[in-house]
Length: 270
Image 1 (spheres, helix red, strand yellow):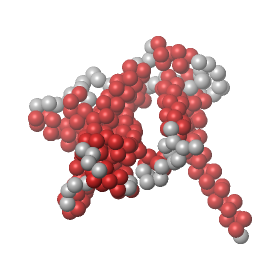
Image 2: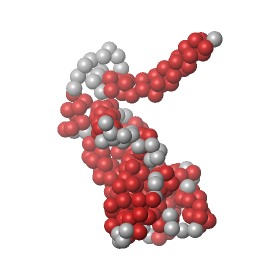
Image 3: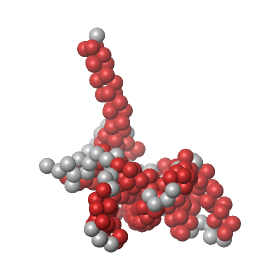
């Protein structure tokens, strides 16, 4: 009975991983297929990668999304870390109230947020603009940074900070020498989460982007409606490879998904 149960669990695990990764493998495979519309027979070629870097409109949209998402992520990291740091010195009741309010942008659908922000910006006379798109994305990603940094505060040992203050260290010295390294996993996790969410936030960018400005999610949506070439598969393949390199780099630095998104369990370096 145990052997049969273990075999069934392994089969379901295999099916789960297959469900997750087979579409990714198909995208990678079709990026090398020269047949129009990704159909068979399979004709191996690199022409879609050449088209991506020479003629495609996807690359400029990707670079715009990368720069914009990086700016939003850096801003969210600075303000989110400051907010989490300040909440440590509030009364528990007030801190809990603010924590509950921070969860609202996560629970409210992005479609509702995008339309609401557009109406508010139009009322203020700002309308669709880079500033409005920046503020909208920042509102969506800021709670993730605050919660991840707060989780790091909750799981970290705070006695070194008290010891440093007793020995006469200034508040700035304590922060940069003890608190900042202690918060680094939570800050990295918040920055990564902010970047990924902003990079993929189609609803917010679709409603708030200036007219004529297309980030990558908006550009992909437009191409799917009008017909796209396999250069989109080539771009997706490059993004997958870049993500794998980032994961491998973080693992080499001693950080895993457990140490970043559950900051109390950092992986030790060998």
